[in-house]
Length: 310
Picture (cartoon, one colour):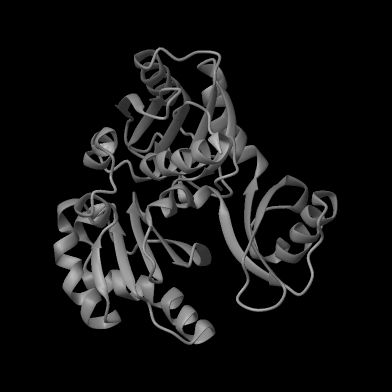
């Protein structure tokens, strides 16, 4: 992820808003803008049409980038989590060539996604395996769905280059040496991810049984349990920390039940970064608006810029 291109613009799309950020050449946050969108104008899905009110979304995107004075530039595009299916796969051997790897991944995962092989976009990256072999993080999406979002950027005179989910961008905020579970609520879905020593060990995106204002700790525990149980069984160890996103002021309601169930510290996604002084001053506005995807992408940009400077 750190090796991806890091354009000076990024846009995060959610069911209720469009948000975008511009960074300076030195990597500082220059300015950001947020525009609300009408209810039901956007319904994220891996299969069906997502944009139900194109005019409203085009207007919101245009308004955001007019505020940032952006035109004819590259932009990183952070999509709603349900749009892209993410898997962590283990292989005894894995081809070095993308011409061989991409068809193999399409074939291996064709029964795991609800769209046709010829419409499947594939992206992947290698990471450190648990033992022998190769671990690969794979993202699969339906081409016509991704094109809906890319077309929004293009209509505003922008060039969408990097495309990923908001949750994958937010994973950069899990700067904890302990194995950490991310549980992030956005709209009507929950994304859970487990990161151990910088490697993604599991990822799951599910529909919530209730809207966030009616969500209970027990409901969240039931949604989190499958991934934590898988991790504990496969890695033979427990979770070291839990970070909650998208719950706003309700984090404290969920912290104690999760602590009792999982036996580890529970806090907001950006809380530890703020308390430990790792959240840069120029990033505070993004944290206050719970723009966790953009905040995480900002962290990737910082690492990427350091690597380019080195």
